[in-house]
Amino acid sequence: MPALRNLPLSYIARNLWVRRVTTLLTAGGMALVVYVFATVLMMSEGIRATLVATGQPDNVMVLRKGAGAEINSGITRGQAAIVSSLPGLATDGQGRALISREPVVLNTLPKRDSGKPSNVTVRGTSDIGLMLRPQVKLLKGRMFTPGTSEIVTGTAVAKGFAGAGLGETLRFAGRDWRVVGVFDGAGSAFDSEIWGDSEQMMQAFRRQNYSSVVLRLADVEGFDTLRARIEDDPRLTLEAKREVRFYAEQSEALATFIRLLGLALSIIFSIGAIVGAMITMFASVASRTGEIGTLRALGFRRSAVLTAFLGEALLLALVGGIMGLAGASLMQSVDISTVNFQTFSELAFRFRLTPAIAVQSIAFALLMGLVGGFIPAWRAARMKIVDCLRAA
Picture 1 (tube, rainbow, N blue to C red):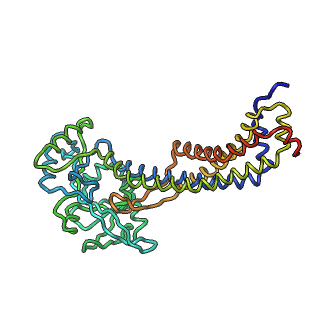
Picture 2 (picture 1 turned 90 degrees about the horizontal axis):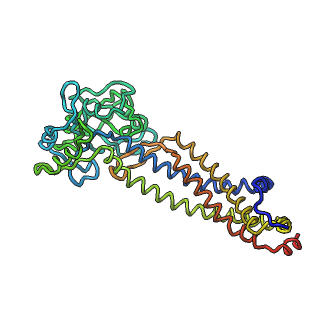
């Protein structure tokens, strides 16, 4: 009798359905591992997307050479004036150069729900600073009045910190600051900041130097020319970066740490899921010895039996992967905050599920199924026909 090639997929699926309780329990274990794996990747991607969204492609950040973040940078008024006089800057309708000199400091404020202190980024800016960030829109109230102790807060700050809501008062730097507006940063890091008048912030925090200078290019292609002028000027010890690149670099340390930690945890948890899948498949082989012998007697090759049992393990893993990914996708509606390693300030973000993360999660589940199912499938394929029929 000619050897038959492969068993149909319906046969594989039916065997899993017959053992649906065991299948569900095993798939549930894999789903938990995939949930952790996908959630960690979504967290890392959410942080990266939040910070990258903060930058604009035609904006340039100028900082002190070697400064990894704005809070570590210092630019004198004289240096800022030189940068302001450079050619290639865009202007507004009134002919003003689109450049904003900004002090950036960390301030500790109590959380609204727990009262525990946490660092918040406080930025001194101006109406031009708002123009440089078109993604920032006022949701409530109005913009602060220059020369006054008025501030506007990002949505994450207004929601998460005591006294940061519209009409409330915050006390820091020896002053009372009245919140006259709440702005939406469109999911960017600005949602986690407090903005006030630049000169008032300099006075309140007793700062002599700005932290950064943000400017817009008249021509995006003119960045290299502007950077060369800034970095080659002996009067300046500054460096220029595209704003998009600057904020992308801000996300690297934290996103990488979360990704590596999550991967390590997922690998540890996956060992238990693989063992569970292996036990399930070994039990399946043991209970179907006679069936295996019958299939071999009917002409199915060893490779067909191996493929069938391995297919069961992979299908089991696929079910678990889909369950875990579905659970992880619900995290997209959750707002969370953490401390950014670069700035030591609180950063609010959302979990972000991308097609690449979905593919990676399903692939991870299938890998668990392959590792957990191969040895039982190999054992089933190596059984002798006579021994199987005799055992039946």
